[in-house]
Image (tube, rainbow, N blue to C red):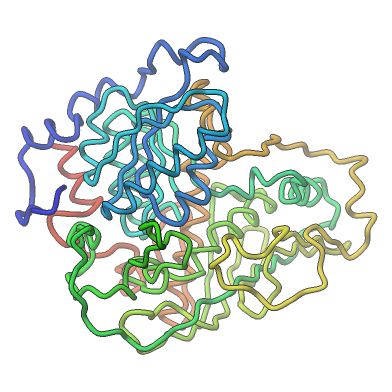
Length: 480
């Protein structure tokens, strides 16, 4: 919504239909794909028409280039609650298309996502916003008939993950979560590591170790005036009303030409109202790879025990040092700690295989891990990495965005679909809950709840500030 954000607890059915084009899409959109998308994949008439929601660090550095470089899509719209970032997003798209043979589309700029989703000529959207907005935006897009590329982690809470997974199943929309280690090129070390492990190279798998960095904290900054270019109430969304300070949101710096800073690490990544910290930030990637390698992508742990350091500050208050242990089917023990090398190590009776990124930082502003002598793809014995005799072969993909766009056209499942992404995200969230409670927890992976633990189960969801929230939106959709 625009800056005169509504304060009522709900919106009328008529207004919701007019603004989001939802009611008709609930029944009609699931099985419909525009006929122009059904021809040859390179035909200019059947390029996927995309809108970008969010124009900050991950959008400008990853999602916008990913869509443009796939050369299967035309970007028709950019939306951001910060109007300066929205305009800069349009300029970013222009620069990307300047290097392409396809002509620059007519890119419209929005500060209200409802207006973008109401456009019938947009087939799909990327969502590159803070974590606390993922679920509501994805649900709104799905029921507006759009396919979705959703940045990780899939959702902020476990309850939101269930809602989103079930909505995708109900509507048949294509949803790809940004677990791009499944499409890591050009060396494809994550896919190769998983193939080796699932081909039995380490023998019976006994343990998995995941190493993740942590974010530093700092004292709370005082209140500041809300910038006129930012719709701060809507930025807060379903989270509690709190004072504005740049430390909480994202940088308002500009360069000499007036371009906003979209490269520095935003403050919201360090506040657990908007992000749970690196346990979900990078954890969403590494847990996904671990589940992939264990061949346990559709289940979860049975026991979780953890501890973590949480600063007393109110703004930068995500976890610091931590240690979590999870027990999976087959009595596989997963250890997750900031003291381990950044990456995933699969340990079996016959040795170990380790895999990590070529460069450990996801972006230039990410925190770094301690140096390690381990290679991006390494093993206790080089013979474990011999490509000959591999018995498990997984899909090859060098571009996560291209894989998504191809699936938008084919209606096949992408590499990181909602059911799989929900389970890896859930394991991250369960680890965070265990760190908060600092006691052993028993998890029913089939029923998706803690056993006889009301306190832990209460942490699977969060209260939502009206009129925002995925749960509130889902209830409205059910009545539409």
